[in-house]
Image (cartoon, rainbow, N blue to C red):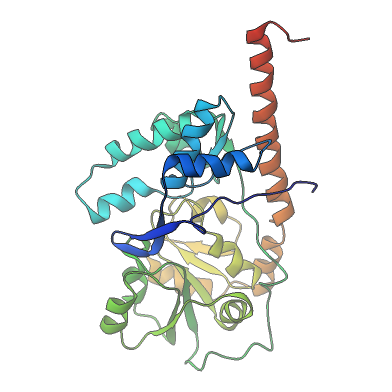
Length: 318
């Protein structure tokens, strides 16, 4: 699409594991060192993805340089933090509101999340949908069976307390349950649920085969904003069972490719009746190119608006 992308990530910095979630690494670098790397990239536009040490340092650099930037809100950190420590979500939201409102726009994946954040005082909220790699994730009639009794109910994602995985594992379902992913709760859940197949983290072809070999994708989270695994499952021809909460409601709604019910057991059983070709057809409407185009339009619009306001302030606007 004619854009050169430079990524500024914890790679290249000394990192430490995040408390209670060691799989996530936090960069240990002085703000000046991060600002120097940002400046060396000579960016035309800056987008801050995560509210971590690098994100805060780049935000500080942008503000000091009077450089426009956009952000995106992906994770309900206030709720996740409250599940691990006695920190009220209102305090965390105040910090995040200050972080994001300093930018030219904050991108969010769904209308529900946009309304929620507006209620918390977030401003300049922009829609940014998601996409799926339909070539990697697709139905595989020839996919090797997982060696488990049918039907196979699958969960893919982080194995952590905020994902509410126990709600899935405690269901009284026929056949088998399979969990793909890693996280701080993996060892405990393996010990507690010996009858569940824990495959660990899978990527690429092996992940695509895991989706295609299952019968229903069960998504027990009540806090996700928009989990890409929903589209990956649907692209693989896998119907979804989930709670009727933001995230699944925004992605699936009344499309007929999943069952949303407060009774997750009933949802999982009803999803078995959904035609796999319907799921695939739905997922094909969500391309990565459309997602990238939407993102690029927001970034460039924010850049142009800021430049226009600067010219007006200087009295040099045409």
